[in-house]
Length: 70
Image: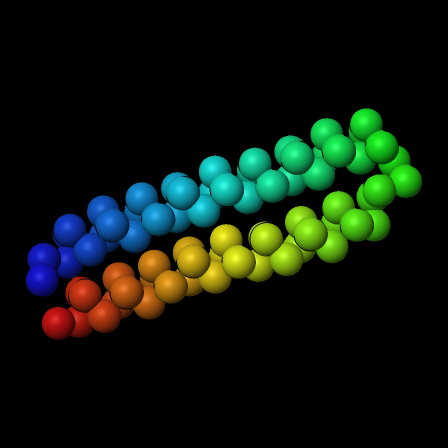
């Protein structure tokens, strides 16, 4: 496979992960501002979804290395 094409694919997955992380934390900030007593619950949900989004970015990195090595 073309390594340049693999790099473009990883770049788009990294951009997607960055947008997802931004949306997660903006929702937590907004929710905490509206209802401060729900901060603990919101933070737990935020960290869980943050890990899932970053895991998808890590999978994209692994796929990039596999595709560029082949």
